[in-house]
Image 1: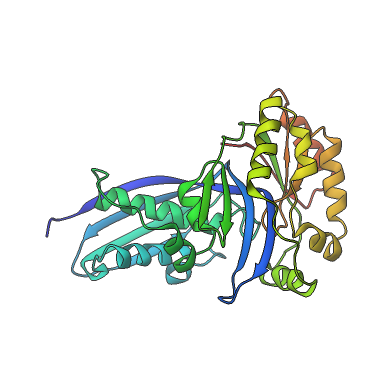
Image 2: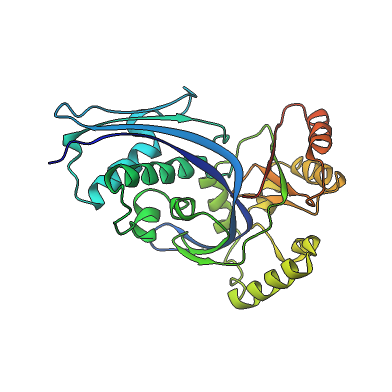
Amino acid sequence: MNKLNFSGRETAPAKINLSLEVLEHRSDNYHNIKSLMVTAGLCDQLSLFLCSDEQSVWRVSCDQTELPQGEKNIAYVAARAFFDWYGINPENYSLDLKIEKKIPDKAGLGGGSADAAATLRLLERAFFPDGDFQAMPAAYLAHKIGADVAYCYRGGTQFVSGIGEVMTEVEAFPQLPLMLVKPPFHVSTKEAFAALDRTGQPLPGRDLQKLLQTYEKILSERAYSKFNGIFKNSFLPYLLEVYPETEDFLLALRRTGSIFASLTGSGPTLFALYTKTSDLSESAALIRETFPQADVYETTIL
């Protein structure tokens, strides 16, 4: 066995659901979804040191001590899944993975999934430096590690369906300025899904081809405000019911001149898109002043 001694860094960008339709509850306890997902410029940073070692000590640590460490961190789960898939014996290696968090936790931004995906990319570089390998299937990533991991691994502008493992790459969304606002309340994803299930059968998902045509037409016309008519998030009515003040956040974002504002994931983070010429700093300052308890991030679509 060749001795391995690898160290590397990797960026883990947040994901944004520009639209998110939750469809039927499946027998495996997942839900089918339809979502247009893009990558944001808000990123965690991961550092990996990996070496051949008979002692086999695995450490996964996060600089925010209140977040899961070690085996409880999804990045650890991702690393184990990688070793399982490629038939590599983890007992032959020591691993030290450090996560520097910038993406807020439990925010609908896929921070944990982004870290898991970045871990996989680091391990690929460690074990397959020449790039000669077959990537793990998206279905394996989604079921074995987490539903959003498949998208976070691939990134870009994708229409995502199934539980998150079926992806159709579409015309890249423009690199527009993006403001993220995390209100000072918490949403349980599990409770949010349960609430949707209680409201009865969801409407059938819209035809992907028609949605793609509309999407491409809006992009070609640069009439981005028309996204307000076609992009929806199934969780938004639930959030407005549980936290009516969500409406105040959305109204405030629209008043700053955003061309489209909505909810990402199951929340509670709201996002607002702006024209390329917009100066986000003034709008962000206004939101911070209006909602001093909220976390506000100025970034862009990648």
